[in-house]
Image (cartoon, rainbow, N blue to C red):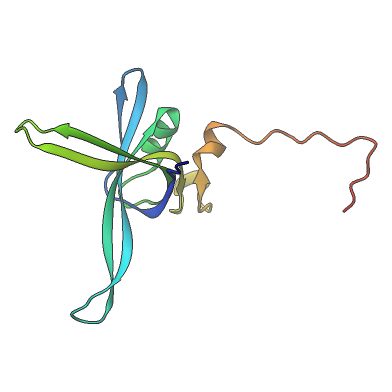
Length: 142
């Protein structure tokens, strides 16, 4: 059995861009995630950034491309995907990118919705949860 899940929290390194990939929109962005390491020379702890390419397919990607920008703080949940290709010069190239399933904005909103600090696209695209059906004829024990 294999598990391929990743959760990262960081800041966008560039504005999200949307392009059509076949019949579906594809949103591409970059995220920087800090790693804390001890500097062997100074003995001090320092933040060292790790940079990741992120993609998100469909309407959810289009939504985040409109609502995020460079510097936005995000939490991204998804899976890792490795790809390889030959450069125009004939060199073998490869990269690992994050294919996002969900993104949450941790940056404060601006404008009419100011005050909220986080939002998940599943709340916006999928709509609210269905109203629970009342239990008739039964008492709830709490």
